[in-house]
Length: 314
Image 1 (cartoon, helix red, strand yellow):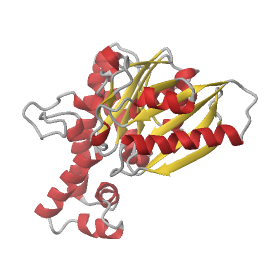
Image 2 (cartoon, rainbow, N blue to C red):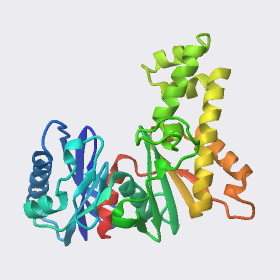
Image 3 (cartoon, rainbow, N blue to C red):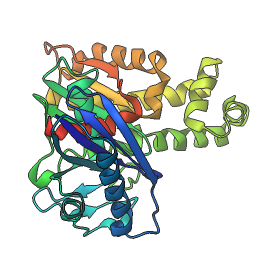
Image 4 (cartoon, rainbow, N blue to C red):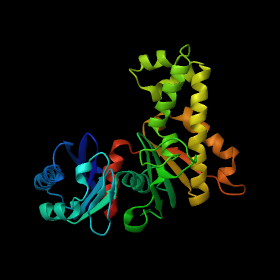
């Protein structure tokens, strides 16, 4: 069986034909034109789908199209409810539009959920029944996979993992609430705290490292810490504390076998992951006498969104 997986991103819309083994076959993409209507953008995607299927005559059955979007949608109607980075998409009948253009069944999924499903079926979570994925990017997203099936709540509008409050009346979050996990554990949060520390401590290595890395503050704070800067260590330690306390909450709520971390910050690798593991173990994974929760970095890279969207059919 083959399905088509599409991942809608802020700069480009990427798609591919995916075999039910997780193998990525033929890729296609187009730029994300935020000034264009959703009909125009998705119309172009439908043209690419049809061209790909016409050019490549697959022997396997084409199960349908899975599309991951960076927002919320009504699972029953296929209508986009909220898409912060693509505000004109709100109210767009995406499922109906694509099915009419491509003559294939269409399933929708949140982009973070699709990446989680990919890792649970074909990545580092494939040997486990209870998989939690957390994406540490501009915001905090993620997905919950139970026995290889996504859990996303009523009408598909649950599992907003970045918006659990961990600091009452804390930092303002992009969702409008204060103190959300996202406001403390995202790359945006780490950049905010790095800049504040740099302003208060001009003698630290933070500015030197940020200049060296062309203004990449999230990477700079880890580099400055490696070079022995105590201010950077304080910022990183505080970031890891908030990140891990949020993860411990998820351990108690969901008790997953494994937490998979993705996003730019997860690319810090062992320097980050080993400290998270130590923090989590020291605190008994949320409660004494509960099983170990493994912590791993996502393995499928930029293909995960496409694979996960297609995997809705597998």
